[in-house]
Length: 192
Image (cartoon, rainbow, N blue to C red):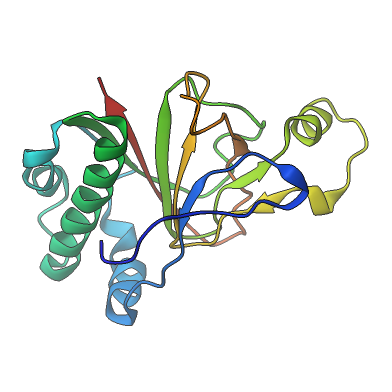
């Protein structure tokens, strides 16, 4: 990954997280849209970062466009390396998931030290401060402007319930997916 991650300036004093804005190459965007129906609902792998690309390729259907398959493997391995470097770990757990609706409708904090997310297609992850998350979850009045969204294609690294002092827990949820669209989400956790 050539571009660096930056500590995002969060409005209203909310929780900091690391974000790398990016735009996928146009040919990759096209291949993602064309090949999305071929991808399984879930691809899950865990292991050493060194062999991650090979394991991922083995978990993808052989009918997938080879250019897309190779790009996805390289991108996911690069993301896993970045996260594992931060976590001082050699292993990662990777999930690549397709969804046509909101899979986690309630705001929550993950039970991990840190996590990397990237939405390749569809709407990005929503996040809010703890007070707004509580209000939304329990049906109390809240200001819609206090719910933020990670841009599609951006990479975000944030803290979970077991976060260190550098990354604090981030309250987040999956977004609603408009009818007829599919969301493709990458989720990586370091494995101690």
